[in-house]
Length: 492
Image (cartoon, rainbow, N blue to C red; front, side):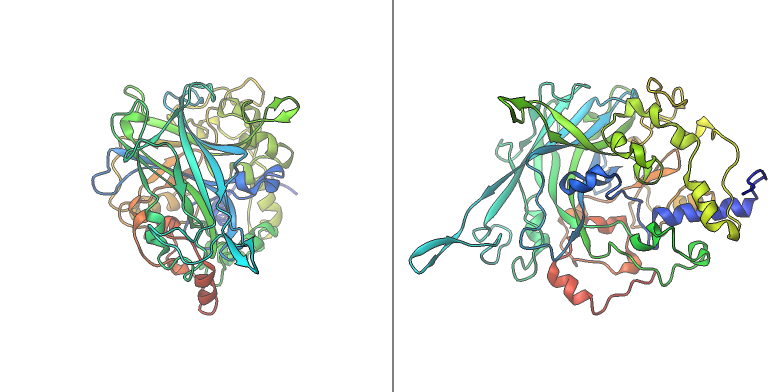
């Protein structure tokens, strides 16, 4: 195949459109990362799917920043009888870099606990434990019929040593440091008003060393990422005219799926350092690893098995042989993966698949290193591929905390899409108050309001209006999914 010819603008546009199709097809949502590496497929409870960082825009909360780390992908609404608990033999981190050195200055660590209540019934004179997670209806303030409880703690660790001097976030109401995660959305008979029930588990929290309280919520939410997984990974089995034209007729494989969100709202002054308004953010999950008398314990730190900042980096950029290594790596060591970005294979694959339609991959390598920037806006250091090079936070989100949330994201989204500066197709009509933060290379995050976590409302939105804001709506239940299956409209 001859690739020694200059790319034409229309062909570059087609490549951009195809890349957009890989990010989200057919509906508007931020690109995501599900089951992106071989090893993590064996540990779904520790699989990070999305990360969001945005300045809060709920009235009265403009001086806060919100972080949402999503885990446990592709949860079926009919996932009973056990549904989807978190891993008690691991921990989940939201890491924040406040000075641009690609190392965590602040780590918020979530650890989960699980307790059975062992509800039993008198069956012929014998007390016999029931097989289900609930023995009757439940709701806000009425959980006696639930057969188990899932709780969690949140620790704050300061400095790059991920195990140094942890301090608990505490409930502002009573000073305790254990919080309850609401049970998943079983269905309307079990939990008639799931939105109100889940909202009762949003906590105001005191943060060590922070003069103002924050908020925390952990629970099942609706999956906001939209994609036809079957078509995308079947060698992008999508007609070109549907990629660059109308997406009518496409389907959304994740329409009825749920995820589990770890959401934390913190005062901006408590996550920034000095006069530096920009922070870098990523999330990791680790298995407990240690040994005491030949037994694994929780005292020996952890083995990192999942890592996510910018979406799709590991999924469609990092080579198959290095995906597990990337998930176990740290941002300050990203230079070892730089060749995957400076000499990307995805455009070449698209040329192979769609060359007959005029798709042409770049021919000048390595790609300019100025397109690889840290969240702090300065070009990443030494972009050659070596273990000692630093490609600062290649896959971490960057958030400018001083920028007020936009009144609407419509204009900025249109501008980015027309300039091919944004690699995902997002509907311009995002909700008022949403904010887009763009971080090179051509990746972004969109924010949504905390209010959506507590607002009562429909448990799903029509596919044609799916957007990131809907990610925080109540999750699907088996009841809702069953009703919706007869009226489903996946066109966009």
